[in-house]
Image (cartoon, rainbow, N blue to C red; front, side, top):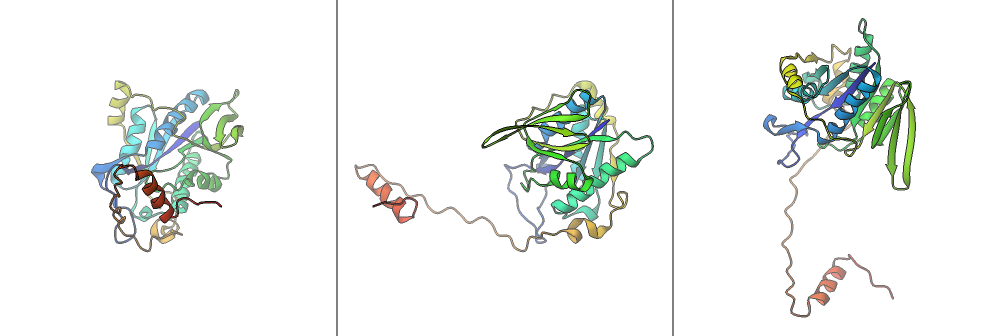
Length: 271
């Protein structure tokens, strides 16, 4: 049984980021990194594959440099990396992205002698958009149940379900989700293993599989800017912060601070 992990390459969150005139994020190849929240998903997928006796397929969508995300997955033990790379994908919103990812899973299962995809694992969000909805949309596209925002995942005895723990403000929920299924994991679930020399060497020699929208049977109007339901109509630089007010402590700083908070409506005085 195969386990699929969904990965995304994003701009380094410590770098300066901006939108282009078309409303799309300007992506500098030298500043791109694997989405930090996907590292735990990758480790979870590797562990689940070990428990299910299968292998891991890493899928990413993006421009040419995004192949580095799947290459990293190969370095830690994934058996196959798939890169969805096509100008038709550029500008996809969350719906278009989920549509392409789900189509890739269906393609994998439809191929001759292919093992079924029992589990799809994703990070809970991508740090460039923070939409947190792509895993659920993939599950909807595939018609499979999802356990979202979970902090623990284990394969049940017999391999017919996954057991997950989701922590909420009101407590913790323990879930049993029948396979095939989708899970999205939090950043606390697991640390990504350190690659061995053997897997790093194998990753350098491995050939990534590149797929286009046509390969997935998707019309150009179903993905990319053409199929996007959300568009950025305007963007402006963040305004500069106002100058800092310094209150010297000559004995009256406390009263001055209270006056400042009252003037800005940050505190209320009750009768």
